[in-house]
Image (cartoon, rainbow, N blue to C red; front, side, top):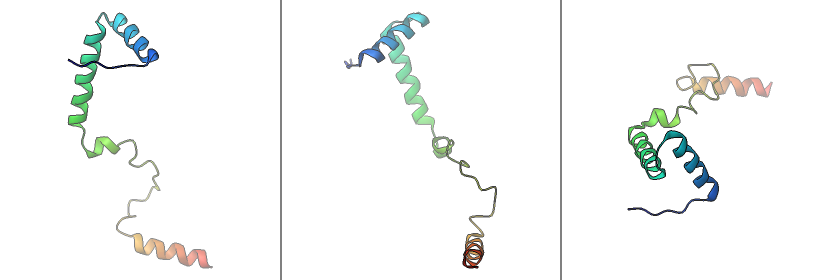
Length: 80
């Protein structure tokens, strides 16, 4: 058994949601925790960072393999 304290707004949201779904508050919290934990267990590195990958994309696919040459060109251009 777990006892926890919730702020009034969250408790109100839980009550409202449980009522709309026809569940008790305990059942809603139990189902929510089971789903949350199962998502954590299944999450791999790609899923964890998926919203970040490619976010600042340059459109180039050779940055990791050609980084030294690209940096050299950029520095030469900047010095001119």
